[in-house]
Length: 281
Image (cartoon, rainbow, N blue to C red; front, top):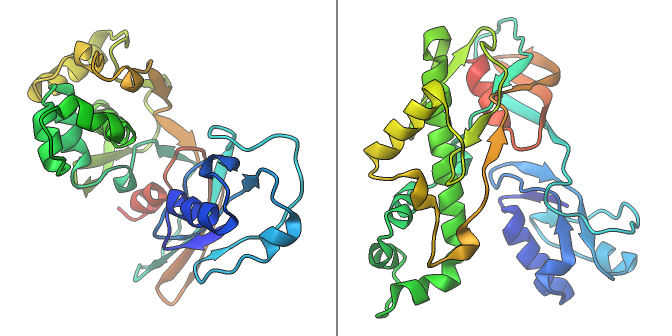
């Protein structure tokens, strides 16, 4: 699939309607940005090659690759390759071999963090008001919005991850870039290699990281136990860990007339836009 100005999920909805198949019959390994020209592999269950190749759309293109015995699923992705054009920059030598593994702006939206805080504080009525849901049973109304709530919860965990990582890197700072929820702190060399937990109810915390997470949660009136939702068991998950630094592979670039064209690869879940921010901060 090659697309522009479409999220992966919106593109899948278009394909599902066009081929008249359930959306779960279309497999994918990861989500790609809306505001980019992106390509990714999809798998279709029992859709013939000639049917796929007949698809026409102004912003979506399908190219047949071959047949497989298994559907693609989230997590199958190994990594992403990027080509990013940066304009109106001064020519200078560029080099980067690793990246601070923050979550970038694409992970967040204007309401995600607000909704997540209300969810963790068990303020379900206020969530319904923000989502413009009307009814006398807030918990019942929100049962149909669990996918949105899970997205908001993940965004809040990502936001806290960013805050903790930036605080840990502050003593080693060589660069800083503001974003909507704080600052990205960049360093000359990685000062540590251990991964960092995305906070959850079962996260075992020790030392400085424990104190940072407790402090940031307390500022929002939240505790670890609040990540348990008796009303919404499907929102409960276990702790996952994220590398604080990731390698930037195959990096090269071209400069011409104030424009830099960057080419590089990152592991899955890492943000190419952060490479740009680090290089030009």
